Image 1 (cartoon, helix red, strand yellow):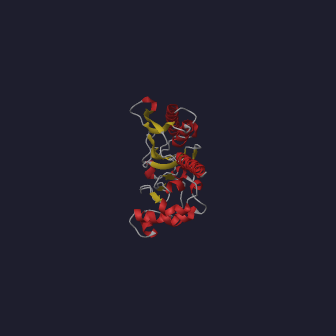
Image 2 (spheres, helix red, strand yellow):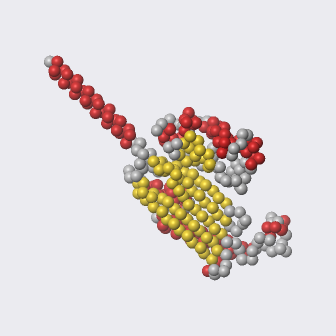
Image 3 (tube, helix red, strand yellow):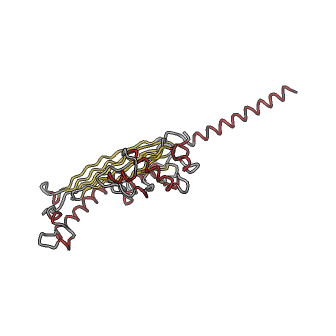
Length: 298
């Protein structure tokens, strides 16, 4: 009798152990490190001269597109559309990657030619009133007879690609004939499970923005080797007293990275500030169950 009871108890113990191991295995399988993504790259360069004359001004486009070509256990087509939409625009996300790049380039050339035609007709002369044109005499000196040359560089890069998310950065630089080029850095985090971009409210609890302010301020002061907001402003920053997270963030396994573009809280001559915030500093602000919360526990 005792032997039968012992065998029964042993069977129950083995069964419970198997169930527990199965549950743990399922939990881990839902949070795999490897996304199984294969990326493709398109490197595109195009120069177009006005009237197809190499002696004339031109527009120059460089586009380096990295995008997911295949993804194990996730929808690669949805992910590809997100990349096309964020890198070159929503008008192109229904096309294949190569078609999208080609069409973007053709539209860029068409817009340049259209601007050149408008300039040819309306180009101001020295005889016209500067008040009406909103041009200074110094600006007038820079107006060429045959329009300007344009250039644009667009590229994206993968910052983090694990645990069901892809964090990527899009950098765009352009110049439309002025003396300054304009640069923007746009950060995105793609949730592969649903094909949606992750927002701040997805990862942070209510009130996170005000709580992050002193953290961002301290990070800026440390990065610039100063001890006060006034000293930051002396360097060319502004509005730091009221700085808030700007939705332009990346997620990694170490923490959150914010990028503030040139001219956002600093003079355009300064480098775009990039703020890294480790999870240990903001764990209490993270929304429980979010991807950032899970990564902070690794």
